[in-house]
Image (cartoon, rainbow over all chains, first blue to last red; front, side, top):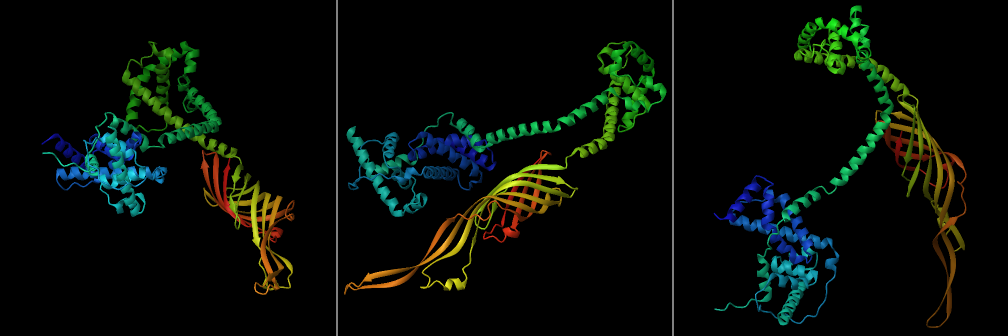
Length: 188
Length: 421
């Protein structure tokens, strides 16, 4: 049995026993993953950290009721996606609390939606820079749809915007990303 | 074989799907600290408030109890210097031993030691004996002479420095005896002290009761509502306790009342609005802003420790008054208009009715005094630090006499907050 399996078994046992000491292991193990999510929404790293910590607080309150019926692998997946969901929702709450973030949408010309193929290996830092250049609302819709896998209907509910707007913002976000990517490739 | 190139968006989605940053050491520790703060965000504030309140209450408590403490001090001195009260209980031969106190030992050590030497021989046995008795009857309340002798002797030998090294005091050499004698002494003396204190208590309580003032003074704030407006009043109150159940309360307060009344238009008046009424004003409503001094007097009946009810009247003096009258003004107008086809001018008469609000110079209440209101209230009294009382009292004030016949509805009700001391 590898270390990871042992750790997950410990987590499961800790959750069942409602042992608070397990929080540290969960925090240390998932901190990086949740930071990866929140940094897609917030350029400000401190804000991203705040969101991650808030997400852990929420998770630690309710995680002891997390049901574990399937295999260890199932637990890994479901627990991870549960934490991711909490982080996404906490990020959206944060965005909503800073109302100004989503009220301004930069308009830019539509130049068609030709697909762009990846020329070189993608690096997270580079792509994050491109994402930060998108208007906040566009970036949020892009993250929710393309990475988190939410549908437009769900996004519309989450962001309290019309479904059509969600589609439009996604299209614009993708278009802008392609443009920015091409520019960055050309400049290199 | 070369892999097919991915589309950018698909590539980004794949890149972030399982992306995770490396854990930064110290984050958990920072989180734990931060969480404690978040868990009790107001904890520090509340602790500070509690500390301030504790400080204030302890200062108030100390201040309030200062005279009482002085009394206690004098009592303590009495107890220390004296087993004296018990002296009277004892037969004559024991009187030689009983007055042995620290004071006496210090003033005349030689004599005292002799006395102790004399009495010590029997004391050993007696102390033993008493210790046995004390074991079997530990709560014996009244001491007999022997106990008092043992107690009186044991005290200077153990506590008085002067006697500690004296050879004549052999109690210390026998630890068990000394301990039992001391315990016995402590137990008996404390029991006796308790009884003494008990016997003195009724007097103290009586004294205390006698000293409690029959007068109460306080400050009050009384927000109230008239028909439409919110008003505020505040002032000083006083109460005189007539008996355990009844008291007479009075005070003085300044009230600001905004009141008004709609004047009903009679059907006869309404029908007069016609072409015959060339210009007519009809009073619709009166609104007034009154500032007045209210001096109530009421009988308060105490229902129980906390609840009371009161009924009374108040003298009402209007010091300022502003009035607004609202009228409907009906006027006749003559309108002319030209026929667009023929160009011929034609005219018609119309009656226009409009609502006008005017400030009136009339101040019929100002400067007048009235036996103004019937006051009824029910209240709850809550003691604070045994010295202050907080009173919360819903009330209603019903205008009477000339005040009730005014064009204003001055009836008002509200909640009175009072602190009395």
